[in-house]
Length: 264
Image (cartoon, rainbow, N blue to C red; front, side, top):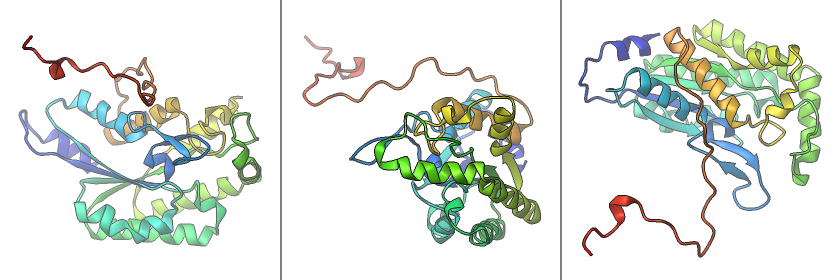
């Protein structure tokens, strides 16, 4: 890919910052478990797949500060991404844009999905921005125990779309549009289908029991993108620790070393 060629061309030291934009829905936004009240989700920007990819790239090119644009919006579909494409992506002139839609689009009509994807790919190409399409994860195949009460009815609907073949049809149509537009595909959905064929309960891999992949699967997406861009597996180890809990009100925080008063 041109993005790999760009990084390979940068000698050490290099003061520029190549840019990757990520256009998508709640998965790209950084949403994981669903919660009652508040924002409705736990957002974990350290664990989201594009931050994991950034760390993988930094390990390979430790002198190049690759910048990430998170243009993910929870609840968004491809038509919404098209409406904000100029503002959120093209105006920033990224060197690469990763597009990932389908989880919300499957609630609508196939033609609307493919038309919006086709126009996104066309406008990015017209702007000279290299594009990569990543197919998303599978939806749930059953209503799991971790689905909160507010979403049990919707979980039944999404399971029906997954088990009934609608999600499969949308993903195949998306691949066809990407091929038609000359856009490289990182086929995350195919990996999930393969895991299912091997006997894995893929619903267990969903943080909210419906459509948000767990942190481990964000790592899989990052690895898939890395392999697609660079043609090789990364050597980045899986993080051992999950992000710590948010401090509760009234809790005293331990100051960082540089924040302490050195003069007694």
